[in-house]
Image (cartoon, one colour):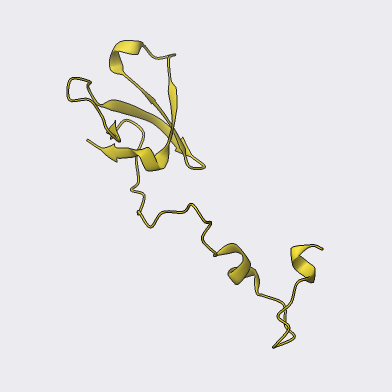
Length: 87
């Protein structure tokens, strides 16, 4: 049975698209994600004090690509956006 065929037995109506897509997933957190612009510097959760912040290359679809300045232009690391905080 697809989600389009499910309806509320009491009201006899199908749930709206908004209700279907706005539900929180079980693992969703209430933390608001800040906008991380390319070129800005960020730290990770549990970031070591002696490690310099990472530079944001790009953020898209809940993932961000970051790098250390010492790594060079072509070495990048993919990190979940929710793990990052601006430095």
